[in-house]
Picture 1 (cartoon, helix red, strand yellow):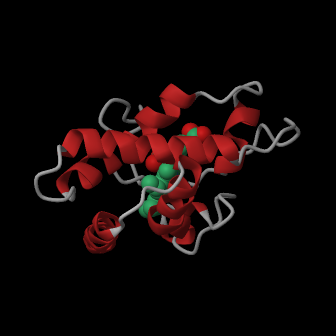
Picture 2: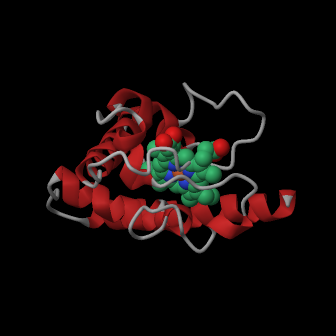
Length: 149
Ligand code: HEC
């Protein structure tokens, strides 16, 4: 399992490096929600699923159940906890209380792979904010499945 995790981390690094190079080559900046959607499909869909329902192809290999990200608001009484979501994605401020974290620490990944010369921390913050905006935009209303992890 530990080897698998390292391999996944390695794949993440390759993917992130390629994505950031592609992003740097783009002349125009897409709207935040569009940018967030693209980032999501690139970095997150493998585990959380293309529709963010927690059913990505890599989910079965993890010890931790992968949460449905379209129901974060539903699990929080109908309001989207943006600051907390930001911290979970960034990963540096809010590691879960339980020992294992299957979710990559994106703050370090994004920062380490920022284009040369760019302020890494600011870039990581901006990418994380785009992801938070995207997740906010895909929240399903209704709390009927609020108990689902
Ligand atoms: C390797 C699989 C994997 C990838 C890739 C992944 N996640 Fe996760 N994510 C998880 C798991 C597992 C959890 C449950 C918490 C844990 O790690 O114990 C989680 C939890 C979360 C949560 C907390 C949800 C809640 O309601 O508490 C958010 C938000 C989240 N992920 C967003 C993202 C975003 C955004 C990306 C892409 C940048 C991403 N994840 C990529 C596996 C992954």
